[in-house]
Image (cartoon, rainbow over all chains, first blue to last red; front, side, top):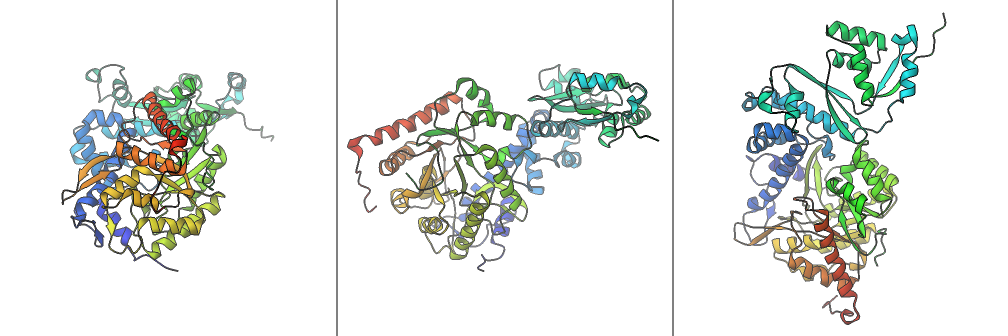
Length: 263
Length: 293
């Protein structure tokens, strides 16, 4: 079997991502001009298209720090962590942890959590489709009397939460034209529930304990155990309020009692 | 028309952009087909699939891959092929196309169409990869000629010679990107008309048209960048007219991926391509002389 010279594309790839590396050997231009100036076209295509992909996923992060800062920060990220897949909708999973460690971004301590919220929105946008449980099914389940605590729930595939010591929901909302950023007390802890209802991605401010409740349900705990876990984590947990919020936004795709275990 | 698996109508089409989803469904413009980048639809659910499914009910679809890395040194990504196969089953596109280029290496995806040397080992590898794609997808694909900015010292074949042999050996069709012909020929001091004469036009299953931006190299020679962010240049329109004079009407995509304008602007540009096809089909233009072709 014939093989191309080993490492040609490895060297090309490294040169594209590392501006400190020289032009790989073996490249030429028809008129004898410097091939590195032509390699620069590819370098720019790679870097700017991947920065654009991040800008599309993280528009509020970009607005918070400005385009110039964002693009410089994203360039460092792209070079350190280029995509591992040709599906760019998934690119940026590691952007929030990167921002957390990115020294120049320290003056905006909530930036990483805003990035988490924006990533959750993109994931929700592209998540699998599923029909929410009907109102009848909800009413039937809630009439299960003393067995109510045994109810099992399945959330819509798009549902996730972002917990933050900062007011991430208010900061994000201010960039959607809801309220002014100056009026936001950024040091107020806030958590978000993100999900898609129909074709629309929603960002809901989570009531106390809701994040813990959702996490417990995702760990396959029954309603009673999940509620206890949430109440243990947040004194203000209100099961009725959390359930009402989730039902109202079509967050559950299944709600049923397990088969009765006869003694 | 070409003997390929492209069943796109011989008319102009445009890219389907998310910002135009609703307008397309509300207004149902009279257009030959829509093209989408396969990778944008490799997601589980949500609005992209919702709208593409509805658009597909009314229009022919061209599925255009930008991430298969057919020119890659490594093995083809079988998972990616599986995803392509699933999209083809779901949307039954009239055509599937990919590029003579690589975009992934060592697990890293670079999101650009990178150049390959035109030598025998690369030719063998590209043919093996295309054979595998066609076997897995159970259909012939179209291979697009690249826009390039660099050449390799190890190249022993011309680009058209390379393409011709790939088409011959694999039986795949040609996606003739006329803008890429103009861009590459300008960037490498070649004659675009000679380049097109050297290609088997009967293998063309689709044509791409797009805009470029102008730069220059260190010798002051023009260096054109395939940017897909502006209207089609006059020189490319002229070349296009010459191609369809010889080829006849062909499915023609107006590509616009950056600074995407209004749907109306894209449709007007597509209308211009349709107009050129109609003009070239008039009897007085028949038998145009293509030199040595």
